[in-house]
Image (cartoon, rainbow, N blue to C red; front, top):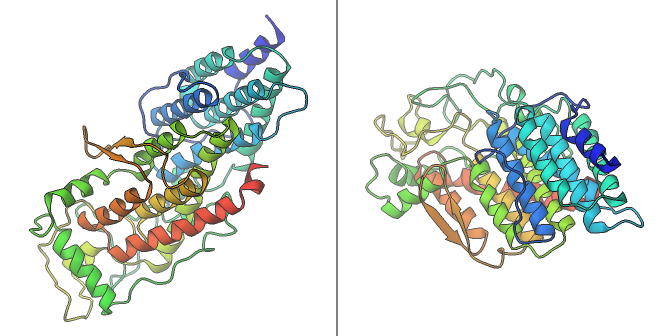
Amino acid sequence: MTATDRTRTSISRGAVTAAAPVEAAGAAVGVSAPAAAHGGAAAAVLGWFDATNAAVTAAPATAQVTNSRTWAIAWLAAARAVRRVPHGVNAKHYREAALAAAVHRALSALAPTQQSALDAALDAALDEVPDGRAKRKGVAAGVDRADDLLADRIGDGLDPASVSPPWTPPAAAPGVWQPTPPAFAPAAQAGTRFAVPFALDSADQFRLDPPPALGTPQYRADLDEVYAYGGLGSTARTQAQTDTAQFWLGSSFVLYNPVLRAALEHHDGSLRDQVELVALFHVASVDTQIATSDSKYAYLWWRPVTAIAGAVEDGDPATVQDPSWTPLHTTPSHPDYPSGHNTYSGSAEEVLTQLVGDGPGAAFTIPSPSAPGVTRTYTEWHPLTTENTDARVWSGIHSRSADLAGVELSRNVAAYVLGRADELLA
């Protein structure tokens, strides 16, 4: 057994002790060894992208932001490991080994039930890298960067229990969020605003202005639109609009995974560029979700179903009060403003646009977990944001102002994250 083989066996089988395990989740089924994709750097990056996706799916967390955190830690560690190549070693071999070791190490800590599958993935990946100094140094750098970041993120408040702690809503009043039918479940994500961001200085750094006040023309327009187009029995909503609402109903974390993969598939940059894209995409997503929770719980704005069908009237005689009104889709258990779906969408678009361009340079097709068997094809990123914005109105679960505010907030956060990229990736 060579020294490299001994190193690989140690990395594959050894326990990670630098950080306590944290639950994670994702958007695929099973874990497999990274598969060749387009050759060169793309093969290694796409392979570990798929392995990460499979691992976090097989060990799901109940909080979307926890899932994003898993990706962010694994790929930020990898980005730091591949950023600089030691003098005198083969850069390609070093970076492929560093990527494999960093992602494997992080996922072994964050999705420990997937250890055996991750070990197999690591062995297969390292078998593709020639033995030698570049491989040894790459593995060591990947492990060190992962261990450092795992230790740094201990107690960051992004575990599911911290994200959604017990929280008592205020008394019912006009404009104030209350648990929504049919389950009237407790508020979710109230604790995300207290988590430690990766890049933001504070959760309220980009806090939104308040939502349109009760009785204002914009508030009336928002409510009228949801009432007409978002009801279960709406006669104004077209079949195409219903289809869009259904397609974009599922988790944005899941919906955007194939979008990011499409960006990678057509990315002509280096392995380092591609790894940094994945890392910054998920770092921006985590910080966006922290900022979203801050604005949501700062304003505690009621959902359309409460404004339209609830027991508390808003005091505006122009408001249509209809206790029989039901949204097309069940309302999530947290305040309306801003839309979390659209903060994810805006963050994704901002990162992809700045780092890739208006689109991947070719058509890409994505599926939807809430519309089995249905796919949609795009050539640019922006139409996804537009559809996501419309979809939440047509689902009857958000006002348009909440959707647009979500896009605004997330673009600001993502731009700030990208502005600090050198510091994050150092």
